[in-house]
Image (tube, rainbow, N blue to C red):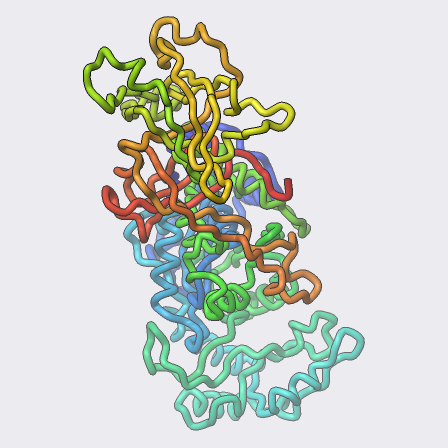
Length: 611
């Protein structure tokens, strides 16, 4: 049975214990389980035809779902939703979800995409066929059976070879207001169709010169039932089967067969496949009638795809962004790909929470991007270690430091400070070790934390005002120094003695603000990548718009920040909350622990888009 292993196990435990909100898919599954709809299925330990499963035992999995990506690109946030639905439902109802590659289009497929999909599913916390190490299923493993099924349809008078050109077939197919026209090749005998189809298999005809079509109804109101093509000639090397085949099944033909061979019970897909369901049912009925497949047949159910504001999920358009160098690759943290989201700092638990929160419906709607960001904040709040970082630094000089600490007898005294790594650890867990750093005469602060002439309501540093350096001392601002261009080069302040955080009497001096800082003596320079949404338009490709024109020119700003020493030891992929700034992750690729810190902004502490 598939099982999630999200980054936040405490969130996962809470989610498991909580009652899952119902939706129409859960209601269908619960009805089928109560009615015993698939209770008679036999499972022989692997996919197979009717004879294979007849030698098996009652299926130990109560339901079987599948996630069937085509390995022609990197998975995106929409696929993450589908993964969580298919694997999550199998998990919740004592079933199994199959990872299956629908590799029927060899010209666009590659092992790079196969490996990336396997990695994405595992990273999200799921396995297939009951084991994290089980091999995925592949449509190409069933090519022999699919060919046998095609010959059966021909022999049963349910398929024929058509030699019309693609344009002729398109015209003769008709449209919603006009029925199709029968192909002149539709009346060929079964024997003639079988002979020519075998010639197609044997490479005796040119690519595109003919196709095998199902013989259904050229007057059907559903255009998908007007004799759809089920096999075409393609001389292309397949990444799995090599050059064994020069004919390949169409996806609409292969997909229901794959489901049936794998004894899938609930075939869940997005709404664009709804019009294909009649063919799905027609094909399985014919093959069950012919004794090739076992009953009961799988059933297809459709749910609304994910429409997320400020995001595009077209594989073609995402590829355009990559190949036109609008982004820095498929794993660019601005990309909605799973590898991009992972590098941005999203967690498996946050994406599972997002899929759960947006629910499953039958109607299309738009989900605001802030919903996704909120799920990440919720997951990281209790698990991301804290740290202080100064993104836009200016030096603060504590002019009376040496006087206050004259009794230490050492010039340049550094006072040790301690702060919790995690202020509110999850209930029942041991708090992590505290962070240790030092404060001295000079510290870095955010430039925005000083105003020579403060605006109304400003509570941070300005001449005469007191604030607390978080985890350190209360200080009183005395002014600033400027460079030759009038730019503030230093902020000056004095230390208020006996106000160190955590010491007796430290809270007797009241202040209205605490600011973050990093000591000049041991602060560490770090590359910080401040990411924002990739598009300015909430629906960048809706209505035929050129999505490139909506690209946000400020979606990435790279700065040299100064971080507290504990952050220099971060591991690649480790998440933090930079206090007051947001949640950051040590970059998976470029960050080098101890020598080259690189952090990516995952999400701010609150939604500030457009504000």
